[in-house]
Length: 173
Image 1: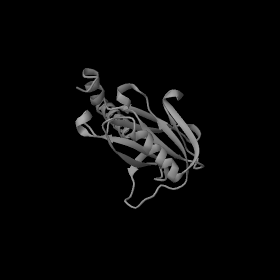
Image 2: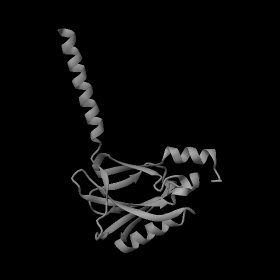
Image 3: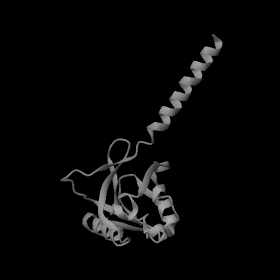
């Protein structure tokens, strides 16, 4: 009887731990509505490096004055920050940056970055590629983790399948 009770207790604890880890941080992204416009004043973050054919190129529009600050989890030389940029110019800078980095660029995907309450705290503009170039159109994995005092850690990685393919055939032949 005592063993059964211990087993049940351990099972409940493990189940709660699994459910808690699946819940995530609450920060997520969502598609823009068809008629939704990006408006406001932004800090533009242009992120990218030259390794892996510049595939880790992405841009963020961080809404100024909303109490959140997007911070790429990377050395500062991997990204450029431009503050106090109005909506149209911010979108143009971001689109230009992500579109000129790679020969397989097809178009951009814009997504809202949402806080735990579903409020927009910024936007991500990511490049989508021709699928014959890397096997996937969207090669980036981006996660948002809340830190202290409104700071949000942004982690950017390239899909492992794409990385492995590039390591086998770095020239894309």
